[in-house]
Image (cartoon, rainbow, N blue to C red):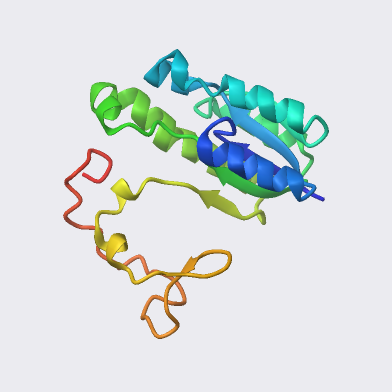
Length: 184
C-alpha cells in the first residue's frame, strides 16, 4: 500500500487519521512539531500521543518532527518517499482565534505559509495524491451551518435534490463571518 502523509499527526484529527490509515495497512509519515505546547502550555502537548502512535504502530507509523513552515524540510519528506505518496491529510494548524490576534505573524506563517509549503511539495512529488485540507468552520462563516446535511453510514451528505449535492461551488457566500479573526 502507498504512503500517507499526515500533518498535525499528534493532534486530535491527525492522530485519528493515523490510527485509521495504519489499521488499513498504510505506511503513515506523521509530521508534527508539538507546537501546541507552545500555543497552550505543556498540558496541550502532542508529544504523548505521538509516542503512543509510534508504540502502537511501530511498522506503519514514522514520526517526523518538523515545522510545516520549513519549506525545505517539507520538500525533503515528500522527496524521500520516492513518489509513493497516495494521500495527504493536512491537519496541522494554529487553531486559536485569540492566539492569532496576539501573534498574527506566527499564525499566518503556520496556517498559510505552512499550507503553501505542503501544497508545493505535493505538486512537485505527489501531484496525483488526494490532498485533504482540514480547516475550521470559522473561516467559512455561518452559511455552511445552514446546509441540510444528512448523516449516512460513512459521512455527512447533502440531499440528492439539493443544488449543492454534486459539490459546493466557490460562489457560495462566506460573507458576514465577522465572529472570528479567521473569518474576517
